[in-house]
Amino acid sequence: MIKKVGSLLAFLLILVSSVQAQKLPEVRVGTLQASDHGMLFAGVERGTFTKNGVDAKMVFYNTGVDMLNGMIAGQHDVSLLGSAPFLAAAGNGAPLVLIGHLHGDATRNVYSEPHSVVVSAASGIKVGDIASLKGKKVAFARGTVSEIILIGLLKGAGLNLSDLEIVNMPPPNLPTALRTGDVDAVVAWEPWATVATMKVPGAVRISRGDCKTCYDVGTIITTKKVIAEKNDVLQKFILGFAESQQWMRNNLDATVDINMHYIKGVDLDVMKVAIKNATYDMRVSRMVVDAYNANLIPFMVSNKQIPKVFDAASVVDPQFYLNAQRKAPQFFADLKPIPANIQFK
Image (cartoon, rainbow, N blue to C red; front, side):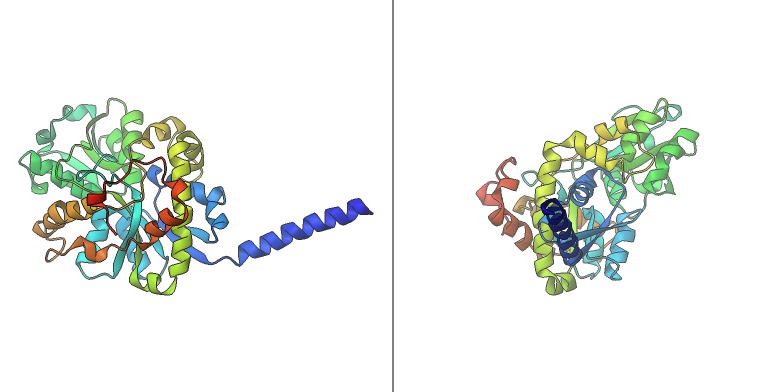
């Protein structure tokens, strides 16, 4: 009889826990099949967001541009994507706000490590020879960070996009196009750049993180409407994100295993390489804002992606990651300190 009562109590506790989880406030998160989104995948699978009081639901897109359109249309609450689509939309009047970083380095004013140019053996292009892309057929997803990185690299070599034959293509299709010879080169974020490098015979990565004028960190974006209506939910989400991001930093191999559940068409050996090509730190510093203002925003104006310059500080809200730092400093203890003179508060 006692054993039956104990079993019944255990069952009731599980039932109550399940009901409570179902009642947690929901935050819908726009995401991509990208290795540097692993902290989101891990946080959902490991129950980190639930533990911090929020039910995170993933909504998948092919590109950051599609994702932002979906968020503006109300299909989700938070987006994980590159800086370029975010600033392009904000610069054209979209009510978007940066609330943290997916990946990046808050102590530097140049950052493009997760993005690469990979060429086929038949192209004849050598490592570091960006100028040899002239006249070549180059594929990437238009309107994304890949385009910004490529333009920055071309500028350094005295070229423009008009000097290339451009093919617009979603990232998962890029390695196949390179392997079949449909294009000479691809520009991609991870894991697709590493897929092309490791799985296309003779393919060579001629550039990774080499853009000296680029600052395109991964961002966590929301809208002013969501901040007004779901502030407490966002606070809990960012707290869970910080915990999961630290777990990812300390458990890359385990994160790779989780990534394999969500990123299709990528082998385990590729994922283990790709995941190392980024710095996972959600903090935003004055260095970030200054780099946006000095490099990325003027560049986007000259490229006619936005009509005029604006102060990046006007579209950054630090309250969420600052709250996470106050409540749970242990989730940031393994990161190098941000000097006081460049802290953004």
